[in-house]
Length: 161
Image (cartoon, rainbow, N blue to C red; front, side):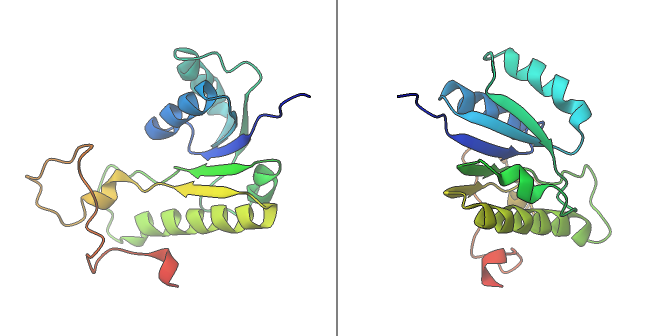
């Protein structure tokens, strides 16, 4: 009997975290459908992944945007799991925090709603490392041991809607 590979939709595959996640998923025998804002980035992603592992026929791409409903439902089709790591990354502090927050929240809701419709078994959501910074003292070193203060009243939780 032929063993069917589990497929993971990995949003934000072209980002630093997304790229590392793709490599680990492929190394562990998963098939990966990576989302990109533009499919023109697919060659760069493939070349980066090939430095670690040959994706063979286990890597495909779809075009998704955190700010658009287009493509989310079809991207989920055939996927067992979703690893949602896409998040906006802005190099400057916006005048309105919603320039940053809205795409993150709306994109996460799109991922969750489409995953539910498609019958995805599990969704894992990461946050931007920026969530650890907030109004924090800039002298604090942020590294792999850092965590968000979940009791902070300024934090946004989409679960409480």
